[in-house]
Image (cartoon, each protein chain N blue to C red):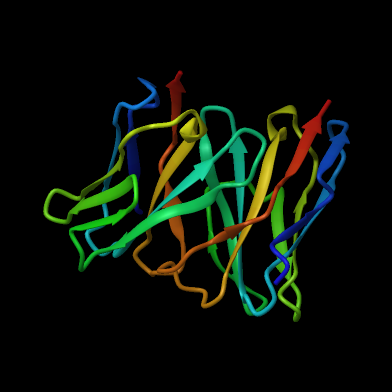
Amino acid sequence: GENVEQHPSTLSVQEGDSAVIKCTYSDSASNYFPWYKQELGKRPQLIIDIRSNVGEKKDQRIAVTLNKTAKHFSLHITETQPEDSAVYFCAASIKNGQNFVFGPGTRLSVLP
Amino acid sequence: KAGVTQTPRYLIKTRGQQVTLSCSPISGHRSVSWYQQTPGQGLQFLFEYFSETQRNKGNFPGRFSGRQFSNSRSEMNVSTLELGDSALYLCASTPTGTANTEAFFGQGTRLTVV
């Protein structure tokens, strides 16, 4: 089945710096890749997603890139702020297109 | 629209007991998925229901079961609880039942087994 790896597991950056989180997936049939942010004690919420027919997508300070050949995708956060501190999960749709497999998560800490 | 609602928010149970958790999806959403979240283990997929049918199942023992009703509300049951079942249980709903759109999560039920 689909397997999603995510690195790093923890990431600390200074406020204003950029943060990059990388994920790899195993199933070449996966075609949808969302990123979720989970703040402490809260539910995961979608922050950005990308489909397999697109190589890059941006939304203000957040961007996601997808390399289908290498089967990896990355989340880029620029000009980080303390409120970006959270756990970030990447996910990939599974072969039957009915569900997701999530990566293990990255705990991002933005230091003031 | 109301979001995904999970009840109860917190539960404390004793080893060997059973527990039932409830998830009400967003109105019109027909797919409900359940996940177990533990520190360091991320979101582990339990199962997914669509139109009252279990379509997908993760690698959890048979003590974990679920069902979905005609109004798309879903319940998850864990029998013969073990200490290791202590976790945050999240459900998520999607409108179409395909994994190509945003999944909306509930706030979760935190289960503590003592």
